[in-house]
Length: 390
Image (tube, rainbow, N blue to C red):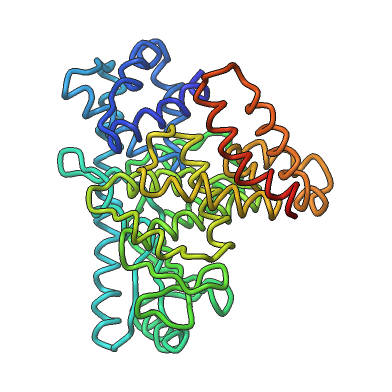
């Protein structure tokens, strides 16, 4: 019951904050009340499911009298936000020490993901953050990697593995960092190995050092230097992070939530984002996949008009030609199909065929429908040139 409610509830929370649209959240009020608190809580508290954002949406909607929450659920949501704030402040204190040490040593750096976006992009509820994250991600240039590693060790960090371009460090702490977060206080259906990992994680700050050739305004990601010190750069990073997990047969909805909230910031500039992508077909493809995931998860309105061209033109045009067009519309279907048949063969022609058949089918939908017009538009710009010119 709780598992079935999670996807629409996360979607409603994102639309509530990103689009100021509370309709879907209000429509779920009856299901929220009817679901036992323990069952609902178990489905929501996992970190990569954006539990703090969902809890924040429920608390804010309750405060605005849009919905009425059971007192037990309201108390847990408040407790989760309190714990998320404590966790954030602990990580922020560590990040501040790192930033000061790097700056004093002349090491250029850039924080990524959680530490970069929590205050800049995510809403706060009663002075409490709504993005829950578990570690610190820092980008540095390759020429500074040695000095940065030595400096982290001097700050008390221990080298914990990784390669030359992705180094992992841990910092032991006295107080459990996940104190108050239910996953770590009352684990459910966890193996002994995972429980041990959780205990280790609760007593250490994890830091991932992403090493690129030139930092200044860039980060090496997927063998490519990308700007990350702006909203548009962080969006590009979120798109590539989601695509990386998708292609690895895993899911990472937090990246989609990051992208959705960035896209709907008033200071986000779609033209700048398109300039970052440029004519790079590889970037077009991965961004189209991720924006398609945003649309599938949160609705077409989540994309500002300034970036829809990536999805409907560059994405389908480059994606179909390279056999990945269907991923921009249905990443879950792409994942299932790719794992069911021969991966290497399907990677080349499977999505092309699936997307082609789907586009052709929709082109003959009932007359006058919006889907028919959209399908014909896609067909004229993708399949038709490929069939008659390629």
